[in-house]
Image 1: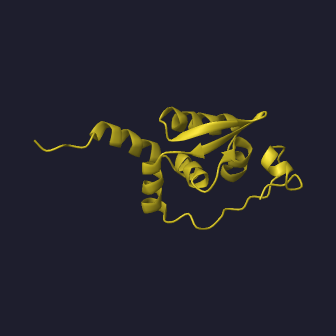
Image 2: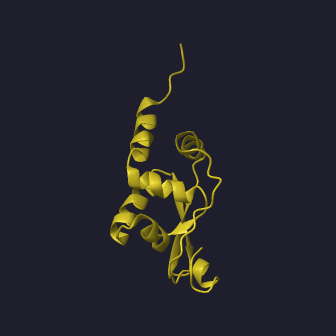
Image 3: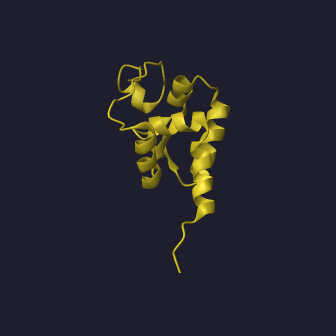
Length: 115
């Protein structure tokens, strides 16, 4: 008998990637961990909306949250999704630069501006 892929799991993962804002979030997270304030600035969306998208990605096991004091940083941890993003979006060679006023520990280390 031929070993068939788990079509249900693959379809569920593709549905997560089919949402444009989640795809944008994952594009940022594949470069480096980000806090919600950075994702808000990049996407131009409110915190509750971003948190809802992050919850879906976290519950699916694609990302993980890491606390740093009061701030939470999100990291892409799924190697298969990283490979899929490489195929879909190309290599993540260029660093995306954001310049925002932000109180998170990452930004406070660089004169209160995120880069």
